[in-house]
Length: 70
Image (cartoon, rainbow, N blue to C red; front, side):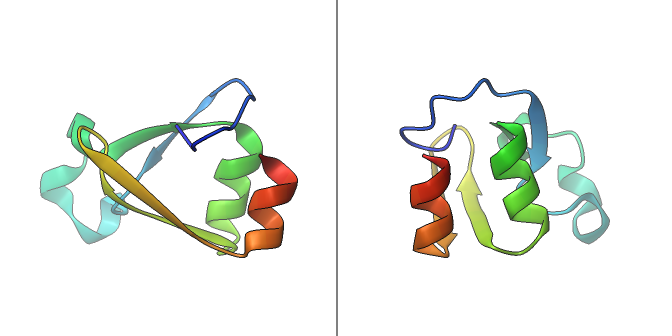
């Protein structure tokens, strides 16, 4: 789901954390498929993911980390 990432998506990530929005807990629009590396980068706070999985996700963060992983 990260643009240009060629790794296999093996992780599901909640765009809005489950603990912060119980109403979105299992809403598919709040879930995005990520490769393990991008999922780890997100949880380490190196990249951020926002948006709606049905429409557009926005990835921001450390450009060097994104370049390395893409």
